[in-house]
Image (cartoon, rainbow, N blue to C red):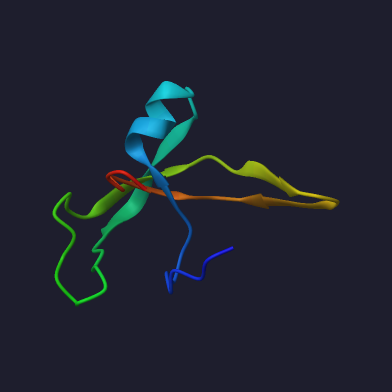
Length: 73
């Protein structure tokens, strides 16, 4: 596992669309900056997933992910 240094959990917009993951509008848009402090080119984060269940081995938790364009990652 790689520590990206992200302060939240993110999911790619194309992945969400191709897997029909339910979304909801965030209460207020959240600005997002890349590693050098610039605003991300895809703009503010306006949507988040409904809670989804994350399973890693025997560990399970419900999380919400902010939706943005992550490019090839």
